[in-house]
Length: 225
Image 1 (cartoon, helix red, strand yellow):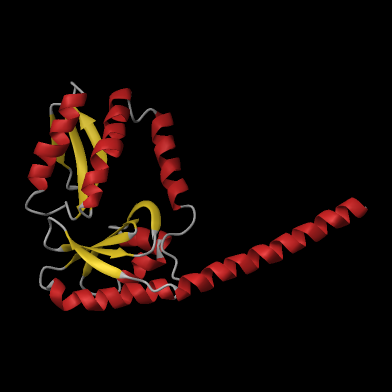
Image 2: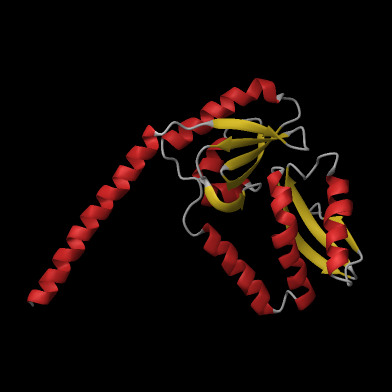
């Protein structure tokens, strides 16, 4: 009985200390000024807003507003700005697409202030469970036999060798299919509609995949229709 009481007491003390520590961390974050600067991308309608804080450990594509509503209060609020068309969160920056009728010079400071306020207020960037959801979907595809060994190799190469430099430009790439030697990928963010998208595919993605996997003959962009 005494042992159980001691354990209960220990758990209570530990819980209180953890809550206090979490509160202290939040207070310290509020004290540290948030710095935000912009970086241009190959797409004139896409701009990177780089922050002095880590937003998400990885990349989160919220080009689908319904996904934003489900998983990212931060992205959902960005979509409330009438000129925002796409949101991609990656490590310490958020890549935003705007409508063509607006210029970044007119929007930049408003967006910076908007992002700074969300971070200062402690808005949730990406909800817990997002990564696990993606990993689960991936495992289900592999286990169902939908993805063969060649496709697994293609995806591994894209993840390890291609994604990093595309994400560095504020864009993203997603494998969508492979048939008769043709790899289909979806480009989003800065790389989706920029003038250099074809160069990215042919001189970048295609060359790398063809050199590493003989079965690959061509890489094409999947526009979703």
